[in-house]
Length: 130
Image (cartoon, rainbow, N blue to C red; front, top):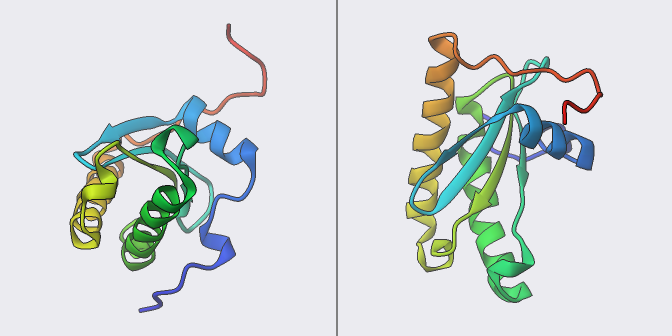
């Protein structure tokens, strides 16, 4: 089992993040909130987004490191999804094990949605429906 986090497993473009926010669904846990939508790839891609409102750079980077490590360990649980992870306000008080456990539960929830056929994402044609 490969436990790296290569570029092919990351969301790199702002358009990809925006597509997940616009067309995807959301699931929240105690420490993390994920946004997810299906992709046409055979693998999962992850993005981590920590707002400046979360705190100073040291606090944001610590949380990002914990989330990245959790993603690295559990990214094989999914295939064919784009996922953006947001920490919740109390995530900096959580231990890495707690974050990893919660991320694993959230990813299993997403995979279960695909198995029962409710994970189909709405694909936009680029036009705004506002």
